Amino acid sequence: MSPRHEHTHRRLRRALIVGGVLVAVSSAGALAFGSRRIVAEDAAYRAPAGPRCVPSQLNRSDVLPGTSLAVNPLPDSYDASPRTQISLLGFPVHALSDVSASGSSSGSHAGRLLAYSQGDGASFVPARAFAPGETVTVRGRVRSGTGRTTRFAYRFVVAHQDTLMYTPPAKPAKDYDEEQHFLSAPTIQPPVLSVTANADATTPGYIFTAPYSGPGPSGPEIFNDSGELVWFDPLAGETAATNLQVQSYDGQPVLTWWQGFIPPQGFGQGEEMIYSSSYQQVGRVHAGNGYKADLHDFHITPQGTALLTVFDPIACDLSSVGGPSGGAVTDSVLQELDLTTGLVRREWHSLDHVALSESYSSPVGVSTAWPFDFFHINSIDQLAGGETLISARNTWALYELNTITGQVTLRVGGKRSDVKPVNGAATAFQHDATVQPNGTVSVFDNGAVPKVHPQSRAIFVSVEPHARTDTLLARYEHPGGLSSGSQGSVQTLAGGGVFVGWGSEPYFSEFSPAGQLLYDAHWHGSYQSYRAYRFPWTGTPAQPPAIAVGGAASASAPVSVYASWNGATGVASWRVLAGSSPAQLAPVASAAKSGFETTIATPGPEPYVAVQALSSVGAVLGTSATIKS
Image (tube, rainbow, N blue to C red; front, side, top):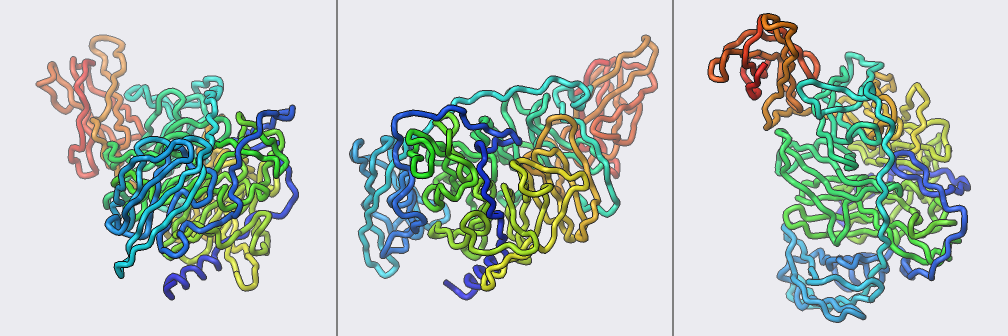
């Protein structure tokens, strides 16, 4: 390891937090996404004995002995997907040869060796799926830079996947007053927002959320400090969205979010969306190896890769931890994908590295319908120094991983913590662990459910690895004493402020570095947002502005025109054009922009009208369709 990497490694260790008070908690079941508790079945579940899902040795290295080749699936693992690729990382594709895969029951598998666009490896992609339960043997050769060729071989076992039935959640009773309504954009119905604090010292930027679980449609949403809607993309049917944020893609700022379905078991089955500043799709990322992307985290890296989470329920004999022998477990998976090719570069499974007994959830009474969600990954932070920090809700712990080998090198919190919390630094059911530029770690500490802390909080902590102690540096709590049973996020802002999304409690708060509450807003009713952020953003929609007109009381009465432009950030005022035909329109009225939808009074009725969106210097940014008044 280079001195630079050693320095980064030590820095991370100093920064990592201890989560998890060592309290004997036996939960009645796994917590579902959206703060819905999954209650274990009353009667003991009986089924035929399930397969093995945990390797004989936990925390093996991805790197094959005697080589520098990192492989996935992990050698001697029992949780591979039937549709898995064989990922080979650490050598260019021309250094790999004679790669083959053979199943103990399905026989030899033809396939293609496809290179990663980063030039550091390739995936062997089988032409057909492996059989559940079979042992797969992988063989090949790798040539080093000195010209020496080394043979390699290893085995893994394919899991029996547990397919869950999707049951759409019951929608809350429709409440007209819980949604916003616009005449010019009738299909856009975001939740009503109340702003209760809005100081002048807030950080510039818009607020990024994704409402779901309310009576109206789910979808990514942006609003400003006044609570005025900037952009909302309502999704059809039961499709939900989470984790809207601004990232960089191909050198440009983009919007990214997850969308898909959320089973009652509390994870996502969907895909990651990438949209430009004109709100046009420029990317769509699917999980590899036959999986569907989970809702919890998604990062685009400078190397042209994407990091995302997957939740994979598989059949498993849980008798060793007091569960049913014919049960199932939800494996938490981290994938790194090549964005250019879609190939899987790395894949990390919680079952391969963390013992089932480390969970604070109970395996008693679980079944194939309600798998044991022992880990529940909810954040990823891959660092330049060769480490990756992840957070697991149901073990109350953060894990430092060696990015290359996949091995856990440090546990912070939980039942097997490597460090001791000091000054109230312990977390429970935490989310969104992020290493800050100064080496501290921010965490959203839920502290519930069941309640472990009096209220949820955003915290910043530092670790002294030699003293094996962890110190709480700062905490930010809502004056309303919010206790969020699930979800939540912490973001450090320019200037040192902190923005907090309170998850299952639909509140959004900004604090000064000293802890003063500068901004606070909340949705009404049953809406929730997994995370919330503040970002600068400039949006110019590809679609034209929208227009509607109000009915005139008589043929000679003036007409009210309603104008909006979903997603536009540069509109300062509106101008109404009217005339006797679509080809003969002239300016008749104007008004400063007022909220998402602006009402403009006209001097008198005209058969045809349109609106123009104007910038602060009067430039025309966009023109609506011409409609009859």
